[in-house]
Length: 497
Image (cartoon, rainbow, N blue to C red; front, side, top):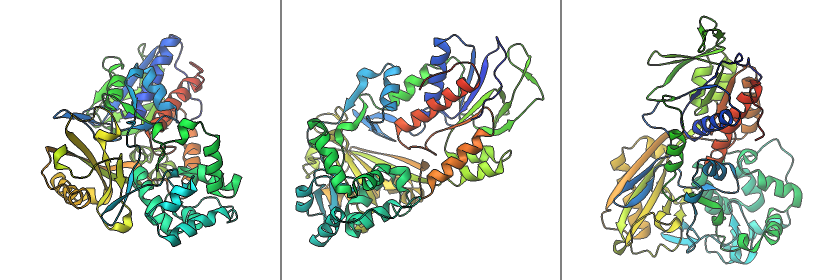
């Protein structure tokens, strides 16, 4: 974002944030904190189309169970989520995964097979557990071991995750291990996902060590002992959540907004730059470089506007004044997702549930993508004697089925996989048609073009999961970065991130 006109001395800096998900709320929290630190008049408006703040972060209490409708955790090695929780006064709420059963499974046929210890999304970091796994056949294991002797791949601008895994470890590792684990994170096709935009660490390992496996083994040996134990498919010690649910964070952030700043059920209809048709500000003496109009007919003058929304939604607002930038934003694809949470009596579930859950390879031909054993993964998710499961379906399945149909599909799948024939105590579905950006091959080049386009419009900023990260920490960071840019470039405050 290029520098825009600062608010005249003594007049408030007028900022409109469109979107009250985690990115928009983090942006607002940063702006308010900076204004308190160095007293600066701030006129803040947060517009949210839905009737509640928080976006896809939803927590409900049902029959004593804590049910997450969107994300259920975030990673602590990307510090922006942890730091935001602490600044919001929620440090005591942060909890890690359960100490017992820190492993997950992959479905093969009707069997749940443990992911080999040390396997990290695309590649193994330990040889013996990988050699012993029943997830792959002998041929698949030998092909994966070829990574130890293969040369570095050809230099390329980008490639898909599937291409990378296939050329380093072979098709069986891709189909049986990498694809289902990646689907559990991105719920997307690895044939289309960009390696550089999603998993650049593995490309760096290849460039530095030639062999990805050798690079992971070296990194593991250098890591502290605590980081090297109990690893099965993911570094579970890095996953954290809030004891009372993740909506505690968005509720807390929303509650810190000034009275009247948050306007729910208020969807932005137009964004117009360079509006000089009317004076604005408390003294009526400053023209507004931006004007935000809602479908209610309200109009808000602004010195800066943050579009904290999906890129595809931002595209509709940007196109009228910058068709090229709007086109780039509209080209960021989004995928849907759905979760179904079900509670059962423990006596009605024959499986030992001795892990955090399982993922399902696409080649199994099932509608289920993954299932989390929520009461095992995190403490205090369900009362004693109750099992809480959270099943994931892909966006295509969710998009054409109503909630009762989704629940019926999940129950059919869980009957096959876990042997559960009893009716659940409750089932709760959450469907998000276009919730998660898909970082396809070439995504970073598109991001660079988008950021260059935004920089041509003084006072405009973007935040959310459309550009540089889909998780809670990355979305929070995007909002805080937008806030810092507004403040520093408006010549009001200079912050160090």
